[in-house]
Length: 277
Image (tube, one colour):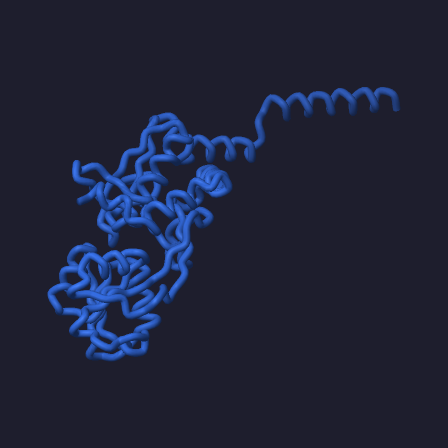
C-alpha cells in the first residue's frame, strides 16, 4: 500500500511538471490571436491605416489639400492614443468594405452606419456617434413638397450615393420614387443643382448646409431627419483584441466629453467653413 502511494505521488508530480512545461493548446491559440490582431500589428509598424471616403463635414480637404473633418479628428486622436501614426487611405465608398477585407487598410473610420447586413462581412465597434437621413430638394421641381409622402411617387427622382445607408433609407421610406445612385457625393449634388432630380438624400447635416449654400436653388422640405443610425468603426471579423481596444477607447473619449465637443464643432457650427473656403 505504501509503495502504491509513493508511486501515485511520483506520477502526480511528473504529470504536473509536464503540464507546466508544455503550454496548453488554448493558451497557444490565445497568444496566436493576440499576435495576429490588427492592434498588435499596428503597434509594431507604428502606423494605423485608415480607410475613409470624403463626406462633408466628416472628411474633406481644406484649402491647403490636407484632410479635415469630424472623422479625421476621431481617427487622428485614436492613432495618437495608440501611440502610432494615422495613415489615411481615401477609397470610393462603394468599394470600402472589400478594400478592408483584402487588407488595403486596417479600419474604416468614415461615418459608417452599423447595419446587420454589413455585420455579416465586418465587425463593428460600439457606436461613437449617431446620424440620420434627411433630404434637400430642388426649389422648382419639388415646389410645395413638405412630407416624405410628397416624394413617394414614381415621377419623383431621388439621388443618393452608392453603397450608403441613404440609398437603403430611400428604398425603405420613399419606395415609389425613382432612385439614381452616384459614386461621388459631388456628382449627386450637381445632378440636383442642374434640376435633373427632385431631392438628394444623405446624412445630416449635409442637407442643411447645402440648402444654406445654394439657397436660390435648394430648400429643406423636412424639419428633421427621418432615420436614426448608430455609427461605428468597422474592422475585419474575428479580431476581438482590436475590437475590445476600440470599444474601451470610445467609452473613455465619450466620458471625457471630447466626442461631444467634436460633434458640436463639425455638425452644429460653421466655424470650419473658413478652412475650406
